[in-house]
Length: 236
Image (spheres, rainbow, N blue to C red):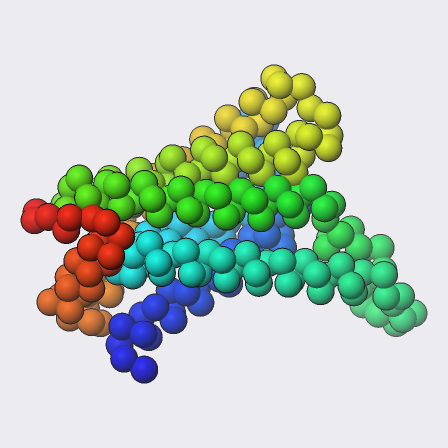
């Protein structure tokens, strides 16, 4: 494997692993900060920042094709994981199983609406993310990394939040419009805060890739990704 292939494999591994984990643990609801703030959110927001970060790095160095390839692969792997869980839930446990039948079912037996909502939101938001990222790349060239990385996440997560809450929770739960919009607002603000706070990590990720590949090869790879995605690859 070339160094470029190793970088793609590592980024793809983190992308896929954290996407699958986030979907598996998403049913647990926690409070952000003090419970008195009344800011409930899915515990799945903990691994999602890694998905955001790797998406931006893959976007930068491997373009639209790289992100789409991994996105469709992630949807397939998440679907496979849910299928395995669905098939294993009805199997009776032994009397000496450390995990009871009910405990296993309660943790992994997410409703089909949550599964459909999560998969739909993930697929649509990722495809929107990659499109907006390269629109910024086309306008700014290599400059303003923070703008295309954070900007694409800000827009894509609006769509992700609205879709997953509507299909997964609001529709089957028969929420009112006020309940839906209020919860969506809270969840989006949390994701937005995470996206902004992650900006230094995006620069760190670029520095690591440049150190590993060498700056000339890393810049050439980014230019190739921009051209392949319809970007101009302008100068700083």
